[in-house]
Image (tube, rainbow, N blue to C red; front, side, top):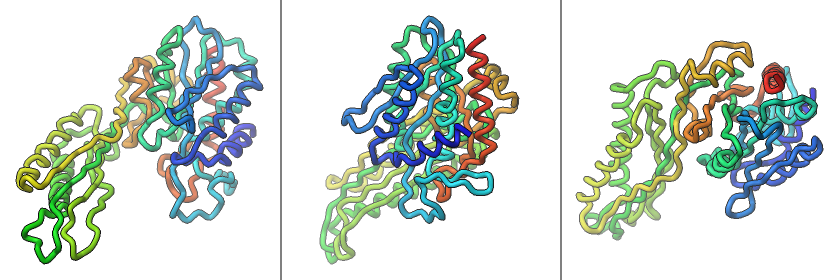
Length: 378
């Protein structure tokens, strides 16, 4: 199966977000060049990573974007039963880091290159690869800019995150934030004269936790999601250097995952207001600073939108879904490229030890690409 052969090679590249993705990009460039397809790198500021954009077919028409991120999450500390960077087949499953999230979609596209180039395309196909999606979608804005500079803005975009080959029309947005709390450090025997940064950070963390409970109780709600409301949680905390020193600094990170119908800025303002109140309580020696880190907007595509009707016809499956995880689709959609999420694999396997994709999902992905080629050749 050509898709499995390509996937095996893609998995062998350790494209963990902390590392370069250039070897994988070079591999894809060579495959494209071998089919006579010109591609263009869009490097990051360091030159150690790059997006890749390739357009196939007549540029006088509005095309379709097939988008995949190239990076994967780390395997450190996970107990794998196989080498995560060697594709391993077992019981009709293919194991390896990135099999579900999301190199299988890319493998299906690359395996179809001979068919794509042999077809008489009347509508262009744009292969769009990004870097650093897993740490906040850092690469995709430059790729979106490149798409906007094409002679014609693409008519549709498929982001190939794992959806079990179901068309996904909606997902939540993700905002991540870093909080730095500065107090007044003292020897612990003088604790009443200090301002304990850890204690004030803890009070703000409890406020965030209480707000999370409030969101769960009061909404707004959208029962199309497994978790039908916006969420907020604290994921990391660091502070203090020794028990006998009142800590002068503490940092923590929190995230907001907002429904497309909710107002992330209103949720954030509640946290900022409480931070300002606590800072006043700290006195002149204390400060609380909230710094935005990344934001990926949510996706909300109408059920009767042309991109949805087109996608469900392509795969022959007419049920659609909503997911709680984020993707780059919201950024494409905000750039006036109507988007859906559709790809092989199960999100429950993503980021897990012994991540896998079922082979029958690759069969469906191959069928999707084949149907897309036929549609683009009408």
